[in-house]
Image 1: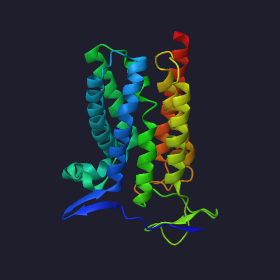
Image 2: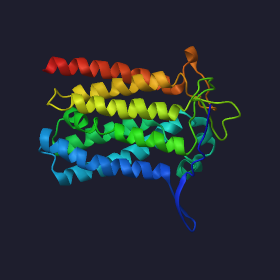
Image 3: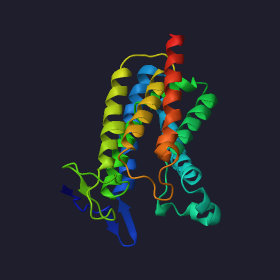
Image 4: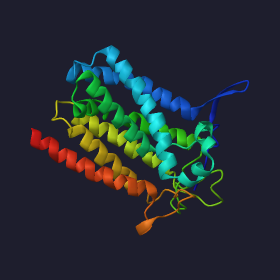
Length: 258
């Protein structure tokens, strides 16, 4: 059993202004992703100039924020926000969903590619290998916030989290950081080292993330307002299943284009 290190979620406090590690992690993800996306664009999609890369990242940021917020409302606490509509704007209380953010980013890629006359799949393939950086840093932010911990375990690395009761739990945030963050990033970087048919990398990304999330959710504590759903699966698992199927279908489609 390992005690949680009691990390302070506030990185810097300036009067009433608090800069939190969680927000800083996402800022760092965009700062790291910027030059990587520019390098991939220069090599695989030269029509996407550095100026357009900057514009794309700005819209992706909005897609993550709006999509993640809307996804959380629809998938996780629809009745609460229906009763308290003004709570939609209280983003400092938390409430973001990855699957909603993904839909937001895919919508951005679709609209951006149409506006600039790119292949939507080629643009998504460009972004997909960079995205796991955000997952890795975001899950570390969850760990620092001592949130989204796992289920009770008797394994030697189980942790006692603040608010998680007296029993040790899986540090599922670290599992997710390792799988859907680091492992998926390395896999997509390896697959994306050469030109691929449009949709190939996006297919691997969707299937890879969906599989990682599906597996880790078996040891992650279900959302308290939802609990376990049909077949004893969590909402995250049910949302990940169509991701896996879509990823496999897209991968198969891309191979046929070759």
